[in-house]
Each structure stands twice: as C-alpha cells, then as structure tokens.
Image 1 (cartoon, one colour):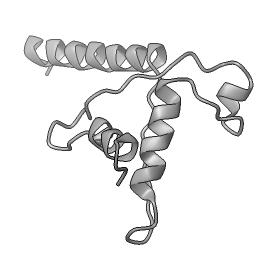
Image 2 (cartoon, rainbow, N blue to C red):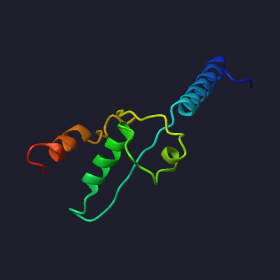
Image 3 (spheres, helix red, strand yellow):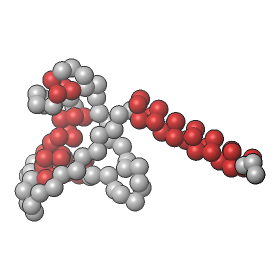
Length: 102
C-alpha cells in the first residue's frame, strides 16, 4: 500500500526542519558550558569571568580560537529549553564588580 500524502508531507516537513536546524548551527556555532565542583569552590566566579572575557574579547591566551585570531565574538542567549533558566551573568557581574564585591 503506498504511503498517504499526509505522511509524505510530514516527512518533508521533518526533513526541512532538520536541514534548517543544521544550517543555523553551521552559521551560529554554539558553546554550552557545564562546570562542576564542590560548594563554594568558585564556580560562579569562574563562569562570570569567562563569560565577561568572551563578551568583551578579554585576554584569554589559553583559549585557542582567541590565540589563533579565529574568535569573532560572543553573545548571550536563552537556553533552547525554556524550562532551563539562563545563567544570571548580569546579576553575578554586578555582585562581583560593585562597591562592596561579594
């Protein structure tokens, strides 16, 4: 029995969606970061500093894309899964760089 027209259109839609996702990933590379460590070991300070340096093209000589001149820039974006909140970079930067750093 031949496939129904609906299933063919569904397959085409899925294929187009996959191609769109692959193309946008090729145009906009994404880096997701996970940091683990003991309580109060400096994870938040590390992530805040790393994000700040990436956003402001700071000195990161050990990061090969920057050392090789291939790093074009960085932006913050929401997590694709809306149920997962974005790291509160701005709040932590304000805490670290305020008059009384915390």
